[in-house]
Each structure stands twice: as structure tokens, then as C-alpha cells.
Image (cartoon, rainbow, N blue to C red; front, side, top):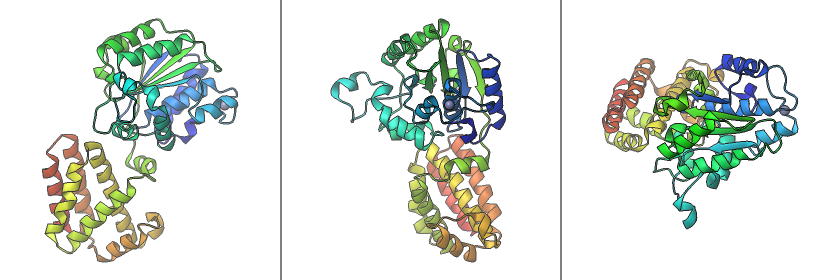
Length: 348
Ligand SMILES: [Zn+2]
């Protein structure tokens, strides 16, 4: 991954590069992001940059043999640690002490397709969707083994730890030892959502970097081609159609479905819905080009644009913003989405 491919936090790209060039990069960096905010992409780009054979002034070259392997996430000096749990896909012996390496193919596939993945998207991708992942002491032992070897090719061994706050105490103490006496040429890149849950002694040994949350527009660019789109689009469509037809009973299955999604997905759906309604608004105002309609949505969006009254849009955005803040403050999801469906129905 090159810095130029990352969406958002533009100023951070330049300051990371300056840190490398001025030899001011510590041996451990603690990135903090909002879930899905792109810190993993920054960790990857930084790891690729420090090992690039022909780095430019502002980015890795993207074409040298090292960059080539980093871009496929197969460089022998690039290591990943992330929370895991026993999944049914593992063998009986693996289930006893699951570690990240067992899930690497699925992890690589996810990170290549969407380096802005959220915690839930990680669990979905590695097949432990209903459990919460953990970084165990087995994993910490494995980190020791990997880092005690010399760098295979690169100048730096890079160890990206996604959600280090998921370490149990044994694992955290082992990592602390490594951070206190880091093996020569090792760069630790931690990506955290809750750094306050880390041992203070771990935090104090890391250079802290906090990412700004993505703007709405950046978030839409990140989520442009997500696979959930078909499902999200269908919920959005049915909700608006039932509202337009004043078929109150038909709203019920939609809000039930939304209430059953995880919080992260609920949040994603609300952002999707806002974007969907924005597209209808643009088409209704004759600005089809700006709406950037996909072939799957064009006919329905045009149909809605012809039927929905102009007073709807502002009310819908207010309602959706209210829903987003309710999701953030853990309000009962059934009530939250029942209320949203109600408000959309009244506004239509
Ligand atoms: Zn390169």
C-alpha cells in the first residue's frame, strides 16, 4: 500500500515520511483510530515505505521487489497479529490455541480488498463472526519466535498488531518485554480503537498517533464498492416504498432486520441510507451526473425522485442523524429503528 492510495488524514502522510527521513521514527507506533478509520492502511504504507528500495521523497516507489511483496502482503518481514478465536474451520489441535497465522489467507484477502476493515468485518472474514477475538499468550510466544529471526530481506522487520487491547494480561506482559528491549531492526505498528485499555507501560513505550475520523465524503469513498451494498440497497428501497405506499405493516420487517444487525452494520447502513437519499435528492433536482448512479440502483432512484416530495429530504437526514447518535449511545435498537421508520413514514 502506498500513502497516495490512502483516503483521508493527508497531513499525517507527510509527517510520517518526515519522521522516517529525519530518523525520528521510534521502534513502536501506536495508531489510534475510530473503527474502520484507516489506521491499518497507514501502518501498511509506513511498513512498505521503510523497506522500499527506491523510496521517493513522499512515498514508496510501488515497483521495487520489496514494494511488490508488501503490496501483496506476502513480504517475509511483514507480520500480522490480530484477535482470533476457535473457529469451526480449524483442526482440533489448532482450536486449542488459535493464533493469527491460522487465519492468514482470509486476513490477507480482507486487507487487500478493504484495508479500512472494521473489527466486525475482521471477525466475519476469518469466520468467527459471533465471538469476540482475543490475542493470547500463544500468539505472544509466536511473536517472540518471529522476531528472534533476522530480517529475511528487508532492512526492517515490521509487526502490525491490530487491536492490541484484545491481548490478555499474559500476552500483554510478553509484548511489554519486547517493547522494552526491542530486537534490532524491528518496527511495531499497533492499531488500536481503545488505547486506554492497554497497559500504561505499553502505551508509554509507543509513539502515539491519533487519526482524524474520516469525513462523510471520505467514508463514502471508502465504502463505495462494498459487498453489503445489495442487501443495504434492498432494505433502503423497501423502507421507502412501504413508506410511500403508507403500508405500515410492511415497515415492520425492515426495522426488525435493521435492529438485528450488529451496531457497526447499523451505523454503516445509516450512512448508506443517507447517501441513497442524497442521490434521490440530486436526481430530483436534475443533477443526475452528480448522483453517480450505479446500474443496479438507477431505475429505482429515478422512480423515487419522481414520487418523493421536496420536504422529505431534510427531515430524513435529521432522523438518520438521530439514529446514528442513538446507535452510538447504546439505545435499544428495536426502539431506535422503529422510531426511524415512523419518522420516515411521516415525512414521506
Ligand atoms: Zn519500493
